[in-house]
Image 1 (cartoon, each protein chain N blue to C red):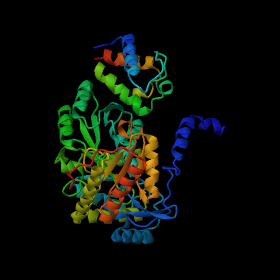
Image 2: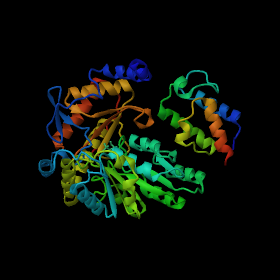
Image 3: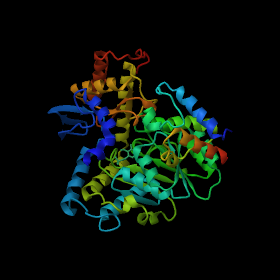
Length: 407
Length: 83
Ligand SMILES: Cc1ncc(COP(=O)(O)O)c(C=O)c1O
């Protein structure tokens, strides 16, 4: 019986066997110990982390650690209940108020993960008569949310306001509403949405806009509020979704908004209502991390210095990267076997990055997706760049000519 | 704009035939995902190309129900006819 149930995965199992050919399972790495924001132990050896999304390194920040430990000791290890039953503590309510204040918005809902924040917000906002318009390169949580939603779902070309405009025109006048969804920084190539242009288009069509700032919160904007702040269009973004699992160094998700009557969603949004809330330790460390981001712009500055150094280093070595400097630095690989071999060779040298394969990547191209954090030392970055160069030479990967304009 | 299912089927077949990843012969009965070995993203990207030619948008919730080239042509013809 179980054999026939799993029969449909035969193709996937075969693809996976090919991936294992390089030695390790790229999707089964175990960090035996996490040592710091930039180091862990794999196969008994210390590796430097260049694939953690831990942009500000706050998961090992002493204040965040202290807040988490104190909250666990005084309030318990888990809430054992959902937000609408016994799972809303003072901590959750305080974090919601602080996030709303940080964004200068009226309301905030906190979810247990970022994935659930997207699942919940898109499915509850886009109902039966509505149309959801998604950027083609949207994160899996956005695609999954669109399947939970009853709305008609239309996909537009990645970062293409003209294509969105065409598709909004095709829809024309409808009784329901239109909700456009884009991301601040895209998780694969580190490119940002042309948000001001999208705002123009959605305004003309009378559509609402939701921006997922998962990778841009704490990273972009003078105060770290993300791409909407950096682009100066916050007033035109009706809903901002984000996660605690990247720059805030914990786990959880949120949506902030000025929409009138927003709180009714607390009793309509199923991924908010029917799962247990985040434990006290997580909420407490998130609050400490948020306070740190609010008072210490130096963190963001260090992140960008590191991002420029790493991106510049790989670019000058001749790697083909994402379109612009960002804390997400993706090196394009010519094919899957090369990408797998490269990934294994980097790990042999003590450098951990994310291997990302189509269809999760745009353009059907495998990527070695790296992320930089504010906690990286210059020496770690330079060693990683040297490691990339050495592996490229060992694998005879053809690189672009080094650019003399280095600097 | 084209609204005839047969003409749209031909357009789909010609477009796919020009794709180097697609090597086998294609008919209206060809099952898009299984027979052409296209992943979900490749199918969505292929449909995007056709959408521009016919000036329609195929909702993803409709696309999920489509199996064959003939189904897709029928869906595109219906959407184009509504314009
Ligand atoms: C754009 C985007 N949205 C949402 C998520 C989901 O966040 P989380 O990991 O907190 O569930 C992620 C990352 O995983 C993401 O990259």
